[in-house]
Image 1 (cartoon, rainbow, N blue to C red):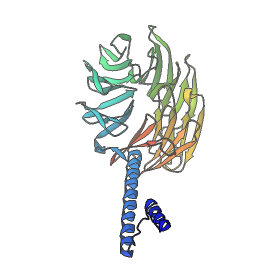
Image 2 (cartoon, rainbow, N blue to C red):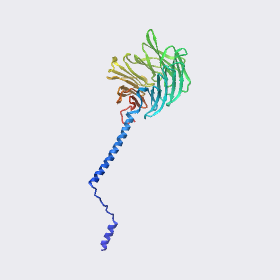
Image 3 (cartoon, one colour):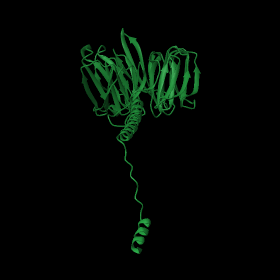
Image 4 (tube, one colour):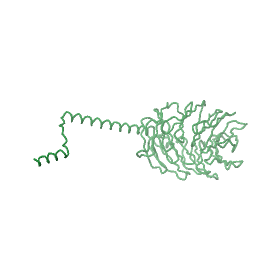
Length: 389
């Protein structure tokens, strides 16, 4: 009896056995269905996040009526969008930082870093904006022909028919100190100020002996006259920019040239006027020219100029090129709905396929901003995961 009692006491002190309940098949089905719903919901949430990230990378970051857009400009934290009545500053997330109105009839925008100059070509108005805000505004007694601004804020403008001169050039520091002034009986087509802000170049055009005569002048602000003047007989110079130091990249309707600090000219590439298609120069950096060989739009060649314009590489295509872009370290060749990104060695880093035709594009902050009828999209410059974020 004592042994039986001890065993009974031992059994009472030992661990209790858990009661097991039988689960019906119907309950199992319900639990399985619940788990499946949770898994599906989680998958949908992940997919939504992925779609959202992908949209942020390669779809419209800014909705705008493309018909109102006149130009796109690189800006420090995104892109500047020139419309018929405003300059919209859009960051890389598609947020509108500022919309600065204007009433210019023929507005022209030039951006450099955080600075922007907007002038009314043929009108007498101009303004400078800094960090997306108005910095200075001007009303002249004569119409503005062209202007330029640098990242350090040095700005220049040319007035037409001012003070008895055909062209009157003024250059000022960012704080408004006059650095240089020059006048000419020739019509100035383009002005460019060096990144250092201590020199400028202008191109002029005139007619001599029934033929076009273009000239390129280089000025140092500490001198009273130009360093040199180079003539281009029978050619129209339509663009110039500094190619590093005092070297100039010059584009005409018949060729691209490099001018040394001493005024020595060398041809980078040559073409006929009817072959020239698209061009783009980047101050102190790269340049690109596309031509239609023998006037054939489906037989195209692209000339790529590296930093300092020391080397020229070529790319050939069998499709009509609708635009080209030169940036500090990349080129872009546009074919309506396709865009090829190339590095300085001419190697393709990305191929972008669009759903709509590219109407304009610009590289800013390591991204390519593209204007289509649906708005502005942005893309990374490399075909790598996360590059578009």
